[in-house]
Image (cartoon, rainbow, N blue to C red):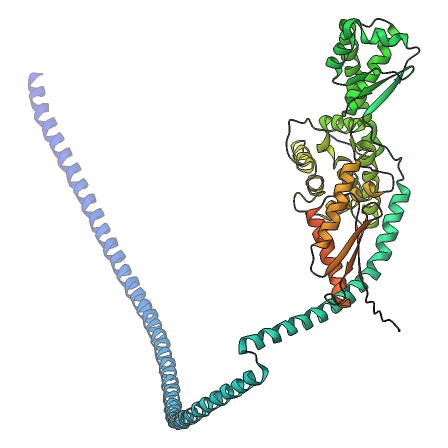
Amino acid sequence: MLQEIYVLIPLIVILCAATFYLGWFMQNKVTKSKIMSADEQAKRIISEGEKAALNLKKEKLLEVRDEWYKKKQEFDNDVQTRKNKLKSFEKQLQDKEELLSKRMDEYAKKDKNAQKLENELNSKVTVLEEKEKKLENLIQEHNQRLENISGLTQDEAKNILMNNLIQETKMQTAGKLKEIRDEMKLEAKKLARNLIVQAIQRSAADHSVETTVSVLNIQSDELKGRIIGKEGRNVRAFEAATGVDIIVDDTPEAITISAFDPFRREVAKIAMERLIADGRIHPTRIEEVVEKVKKELEEEIIRVGENSIIECGMHGVHPELVRLVGRMKYRTSYGQNLLQHSIEVAHLCGIMAVELGLDPVIAKRAGLLHDVGKVVDREVEGPHAIIGYDLAKKFKEHPVVCNAIGAHHEDMEMETPIAVIVQACDAISGARPGARRESVEGYVKRLQKLEEVAKSFEGVGRTYAIQAGREVRVIVEHDKVSDSLADQLSVDIASKIQEEMEYPGQIKVTVIRERRSVAYAK
């Protein structure tokens, strides 16, 4: 058994080795076969690639050659075009050189001619200078002879000629101005007269008279003693509380309340009436009643302001301006109630604005508020027009309204036609007969000033202020003022009156020139 095993083992080993060798041989052969197949395939692929590369190379060479020919053709064309342009430029340059050469020749000829002319001109100038010297000598001799004959120097003769020329020019100018002014008056009078008359008629208002006293009727003279009080304490307390003067005199059943402030006078009148009706008149009661009346009148002021604004068709007015408008009821100007005057001016402004194609609402607003600066406390200094302008600007009124308020007395420049309308309507309202009055002393001074202004012009002989200062008649000396200059003189006097005087309404200036020749038969 062991022998068989020993025999089998070598056989198995040999068999395994043979099997291994056979497997290796077969594997090696298969591998060589694959390698050979792969080499052949690689050679075939390389061969095909070389052929394809060769074909591609030929194609690219053909494309490059075509592109090169194309670029070469374009380059040749561009070169040829540039050569043509260069030839054209060369030709133009040659033409310009030829033209420049011709012009140089022409300039040379002209220069020679100019030199020749200059020489001739110099010679003529020399001759003219000699002649001018001779002429000056002749003129001097002639002037000397004229001076000897006339007995005047050259400067004196010039002054006489200049004065005559100025007088002649003034005469011609005055005549022309008169013609223009007459034409303008004919055109403007019709429209202005109709417009103003229509506005005044449509806004007729009551006249008012300035007063500084109020008369209070009482039932009997026995009340005067109670009003005066013990040792006058009631009167003193009343005057201290109201700021008025109480006059208790021999006038039967009446006492007089005197004050320049209408508001204080109204407070005193109502308070006194209530004290008399109540019967209790003593300092404490007086103070209570006066304070209560002041509060009631303040409320009344606001109601009056609101009613006035509604009457003028306004809205959106600041409450402080409403209160100031109400206070106008207790203010006067030259005897004219300020509130009535302002309402009248507002209506006039609205009517004129409609006729002239302007905004009537803005015009009415400016007319009602134009004198609002007059009711401000006395602590505020300055013209009432500027004070009113500042107030309107502070309370954000329309710029046109502000300018109209500030410019209605020419304290500032007018910027809109509505400002002119407000100024004109203010003058119309104040100039109506009976609308205003002034003190006798102020009236006399105004007439004297009017005559002095008119008499300050040269050639004026006498001046007369007539018709309550609404016209001044000027009599001129006939030998100093001609008919033409008389018309211009009236304009100059009117302008000076406007600059130097303040007055309500307008003043007519009439210049009178006459010549009287007197002879006596003997």
